[in-house]
Image (cartoon, rainbow, N blue to C red; front, side, top):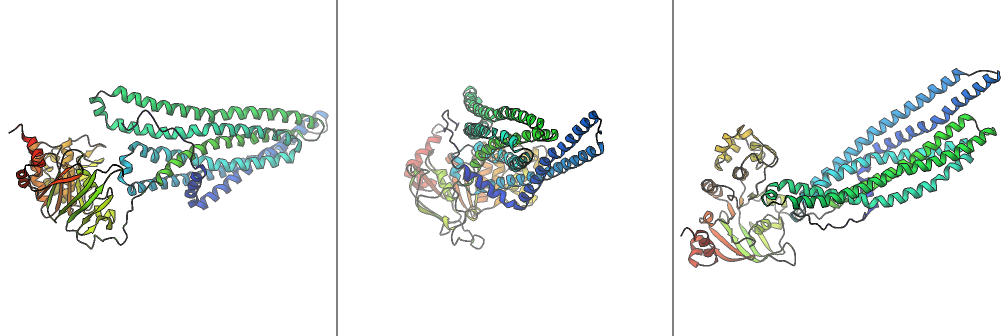
Length: 603
């Protein structure tokens, strides 16, 4: 497992404002929609704020009518009250309509931002070096595409409109309160410093827990993805308890950080309710005194009490939005950190155009030196020349650097010094995509996707006809077993292709390489997962495929490469011997030792 018990301690947001600015840059692409959201949100809030004061007139009219009736000087004017109520109803309906429209527009903007972020991440993945993915669990990357973008989208959707409506409500309510009674407004405003202090304390406490929550959500996704993919190995070695303990440790940290972040977020409401009730008490006392003196009407008191409630509510909403923004910033920071990762140069200056330059397949390794880390060189001085159409086998013990040479040839990594040339041109003079289009590759680890067998084989050349796909499968000796499967070529493979055997998966990937029909073929232990009889059939098919093409074969079973034109024998990152099978056996050197060790029991 890549996840040890000791995790990197969570850090506070490195660049909170920077992450928010980058996110706003994405949102800024929808300027017109955002302007409409602001207009409709402000309009909705204004209608909502004006309502209580107008409704207060109805309350005043009702109270005056009751008093007049008691005194015998008049009665209740229901027509007047009815007109006010209908007007208030219309205002609230308009407020709801505007609120619905701005919510619909904002949801559309948020989903487009999330769509663009996922698209940018997907395109970014294709530009990133292999080193990044070989040093990190896949679940960590998946978490940024799914959890972080979802968190970002949800928080963005709620926070922007909430901020607009809360600020507008605060300003509007303050204006209406001042119009009713400056003294009562001053009493109500006393709660603001208390509220602001409580909000700031809660935010400071919760921020680090939100960041930690997002971080460990990524860790736990990586563990789940790894564990799910390696269930057979875990059960084989009886590591269920260790795996569960490792998961529980990570899950405990996630639980504690999530619990604390939600706890502080949940504390906001009762604290603000308490502060708000203090405001109510002060307003009720002062309002009663002013009404007794005849300074304000009963309807004004009712309206003011509603405004006090509406005044504390946006403060609560802003506090909640602040927590959402913290969560959004933590998620955005992880997303933008990924988008800032180092990228490979995809295009070379004055690149060789493969569309006009026919690839012959001449390959030359010229004093190649390479290490995955600069302080750990594994290939010291590799030189070899391969003529077009030659069949080259690379052999050697595990860790000798065989697969590394292939990775360098396809520019999954770049050499530290020296150069690799294809048809006389340095591979760095080709665009990476063009260079790799010249290679066909079959790996020991098969990769098939969820789809039909026909679709998986056609992945080698998307414009291939069904007849060409079937011909490639026949050449790979896969046609026979495919026709015995339910659905044949239209049988759908599941996500990990576990509904066919490992050997059958290998045959399908070989058929895919045959269909691609590239000028240079790379076989990295391509027959390691098939039986001896099938291996012989594939070997014959490969011999036909490799005629006229430059071929690199990495093999541990040396019996499969006896007919290679050149055998490069590697040890500790260097070529120690070079020649064909008979020549190397005659030398009785390192290759002869490797070859004879595989057959010493037979002999």
